[in-house]
Structures are given as structure tokens and as C-alpha cells.
Image (cartoon, rainbow, N blue to C red):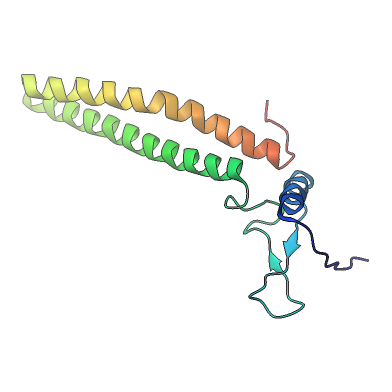
Length: 137
């Protein structure tokens, strides 16, 4: 039988409890002063995980994840432009401008994609480790 328990803790202890709960895939809730008496507010949007706002490491990981996703979007978009220009050039005859665009887009896309893909694997692995899951290797 499960029971709810309400206690008052300092903020540092609450953060440590959230991290521990994330590792055990359980949840921690806290009473919010703005909520009615006796109501508890989930500590995070995803059960068993602390919010990124509460943990500076998670907040930084979220920021890096967003930058990595943006880098991948831009990198793949540059590759798409290179492929489209290459096909157009193959049909109509390559002009020097087309060759420059294809080479520039391939180089720029590769320069963005290489670190973005590697860092995205690191962000996902750290997230899996925090949740207590196996690394996948």
C-alpha cells in the first residue's frame, strides 16, 4: 500500500532527492505555496526526472541538446541544398557557381554535422545514465 508523505526540506536536499528519484525511476513532489493546502505539485514534467530548471547540469544538457538539434537541422539542410544544386547542374551543365555552391554546402554541412552527431550521442547517453538505464552498448 502506498501513502503520501509531506515534509519540509531545504532546497539542497530537495534537489538531491529529485536526482535520486530520477535514478530510481520514481517521482518526487513538492507542495507549492501557490497551490491549495494539501495539494502537491509534481516536481517535474516527466515522472521520475527533475526539471531542468532545478538542476543546473540538466539545464545545461537541455541547452546543449537544443544547439545540437539546430546544428543537425542546418547541416542536413546544407546537404540537401548541395544535392539539389548538384542534380540541377548534372541536368543543365555545371557552371562554376554551381560547383562552388555544392562544395561549400557539403563542407559547411559536414563541419556542422560531425560534432553535432557526436555530441547528441553524449547527451542521450547522459540522459539514459541519469534515468538508471543501461548505456546501450
